[in-house]
Structure formats: structure tokens, C-alpha cells
Length: 162
Length: 120
Image 1 (cartoon, rainbow over the protein chains, first blue to last red):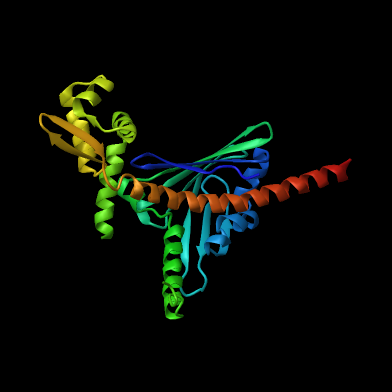
Image 2: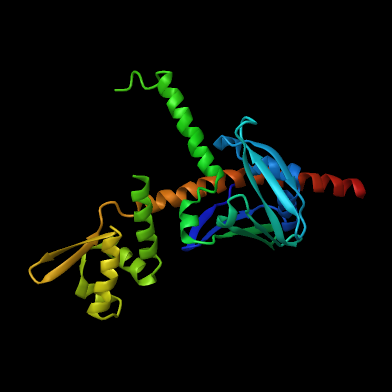
């Protein structure tokens, strides 16, 4: 059974995503903090995203580094530090790859009757930063789709359209 | 073009940050209304409502037309399409991610069950 993902722009600088998962908080938390598990879902293949590597040192002050991209010559890197780690209930990390323009992400896990309500909150340093945020990877995705579009045109996929 | 849509998004998100203005949009979604009617509905002075409508108008969310002495307000032509698209883009990414996470959670749950049985 699929649960609903909601996205809300709470203010000029805040984006909030919520979703319920059919499992206890310890399991959902585990999937966010073990690199080999995180790697399996953070870059959805259905969206043409591919995670080359994923390093995580999940403790206060520890860092993470995600590398996206299909070829090594054009990698997109995301990195930052964990500033709060409370097992099974709360994770807070910074996004430092964009300099000062990166958001701080807070994820809370709230267990109720064997299910977990997950709330992901991103606080951006400015309104402009949130406006521009395609969450990085989504931007890359747009670019990939554009490239695909161009390729399809080259291949004559537009032919025969009435 | 991109710049233009950014400026427009700025204006409309700013316009939408106010509960009264969101209420006015909902109201106009049901039927057109004059500024006087809107002011009454939201228990507000005419001047106050004029300001709100002005903000919505600048953001392109509302258009107004003066017929005789009455100014009628209606929803703007392109409504909230761009705002919805911005949100939808984020929603699609997280939804796709979380669908994959569902699978991981299912697998870990199964594993826990099996491990629990082994221990007994």
C-alpha cells in the first residue's frame, strides 16, 4: 500500500515534505543512516538518477558525501555535516556544497502503531535559495531529460506526429 | 523567460503567504465578487481589502474590472499553474524516493521477522 507524499512551502524559506511508512521508526531510521541502504532509495532509478557513491559518518559533527552522475568526468557532489543525531527520532544535517546557500535539513521520525510518520523540513538561508532549489538532483534530472529530448529529436522521434 | 517566471513566482508566493489573501482566492474560485462584498465577507475595511486585492492583482492571481461604480474581482488567467508546477517538481522527486524507501523498509521488516524466529 502506497502512502501519500505531501510537499508544502511553509514560508519563503521553508519546504516541508511528509510521508508515512509502514514500519517502525527504528527501521525507517536505519534506512536513512546506513549508506548501503540509503544508496538504494535516495537516487530513484525511475527518475534517471544514479548514485555513484555514498559515504556517511552518522554522528554529531560527522560528514556525508554523495556523488551523483552517470560518468566520472561530470560528477555532481553533495556533502555536509550531521549536526544532530538522535537514534530513531531525529536527524539534522547541513548541505554545504553550495557554499552559504545550502539549506539545513531536519528529519523527524514519529512512530505510531507500528507506522512511522516522517517529516522532512528544509530551511534555506534565503528566499532566493529556496526559489532556485530544484534540490540539485532534480535540476540534474531536468538536464538529463532535456538531453534525452534532444536525442529523440535527432533520432527523428518527432516524425509522423500529426 | 526563466527570470520572468522567477519574478512572478516571487510575487505569487509572497501574495499567498497571507491567510486572508488565500481566502479571497478560494472565494473568487467559487464566484466573482466586488471589493465591497469581499471586505464584508472577511470583516475588513474597504481600504484593507483594496490593498490585499492589489497584491493579488500584481501577482497575476486576480484581475479586476470596474463596471460603473463597482470594481469586480475574478481569478487571474494563469491562476496557480506555475506555483503548482514548482511544488509538483519537488513532490515527484520525494515521492519517487520514498517509493524506493518503502521497498527497503519492507525488506528490513521481513528480515527482522526471520531473525526474531531464529533466536527463539
